[in-house]
Length: 240
Image (cartoon, rainbow, N blue to C red; front, side, top):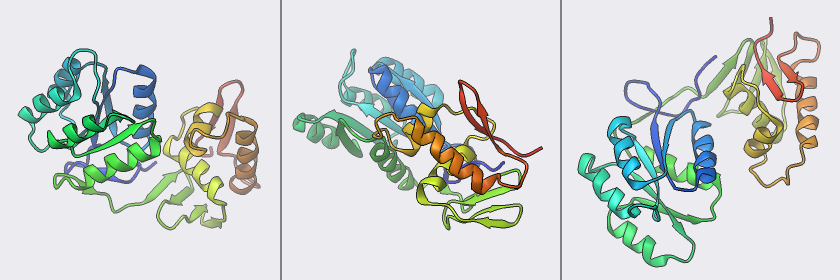
């Protein structure tokens, strides 16, 4: 199995991102979306815990809510920048808090998104901030490999045992998610969230339908790689 391609630290280790928000549900969703990029994620729910965590974790970027229960995002930014003056910070602000956004950027924040936001937008903004950092390098490999199955994230070519497999855009996204998480059981809800971007209305039968499409193309006439874990979800693993 290959690691997910993308941004890496110079030593080859995963990029580190600190997520700071006092809404635990939001923190969990953000963390999950950022982990999908292959990054190492830690979270904090207060300004003081954010500063403490940053000292130990040494993140490459921070996603920071402006409104925290103990002190505001700009005070957190000031303390973080005392330790690392170039640390990239993405502020999360309320939609109508224009003065917050202006103050945040004036104080040295690199970018901001307004709530409510799409997870894809936050991931894209964080990726852009990370790419500006000269301390990071981008992996040249775009290939995912599980057993005899390979997927090229750049060219969208999929091969199994040397045979090319043609997939639709949605089938490709579903297979990419499975291949980025080999041997891990993924629930229908997780797959809906990741592949259909949180807006499909929770219709789990679409997952079953697309899993069946993938099986016909990936597993037909071969040792199966996509397995149903009854009551839990689906898992992709190398054929025996």
